[in-house]
Length: 185
Image 1 (cartoon, helix red, strand yellow):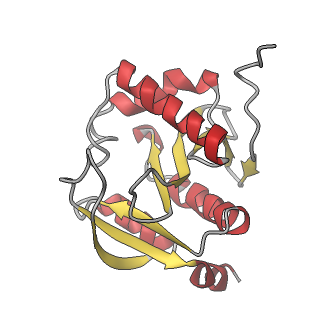
Image 2: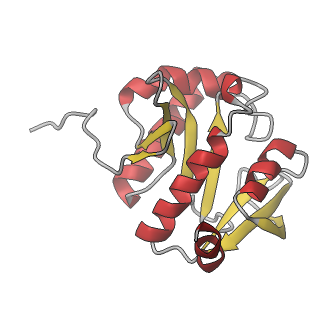
């Protein structure tokens, strides 16, 4: 018997303005638009043609299926529109348990990255047993550094990513579970 591909189960987190849930087939068109935007992907490996975006989309779905976590699809509650992806991510060889974000350009400046990343950090610390999180950020990415700081993360130092990203310049920002919980109280 074949299962319904749109029936992926997983957590559904809600914030004041966002719904965070695992990727679903209906997210792909918006995902592809987001991944093709040169400015959105300036610090995320560059714009992706639709075929590469598809492979990366399926990688995220596979992470949810195989590991029980991956970046969430971010849905704007007011409109029901897919506006980005964020949350827990840890590919092979990654420098730590990542909470990352990437949102459609027209949503920048609304605080969605901070709001969604905070909810996903709460979930990751409560459900994945993580003791710390990192954010791998290019030192020129001022907007993402600002998000990391709003989350209470501090600069840990330079990071090294695995192939094929070993040439990318990144700083690791992060904090421990205890630091996060102290801030949330």
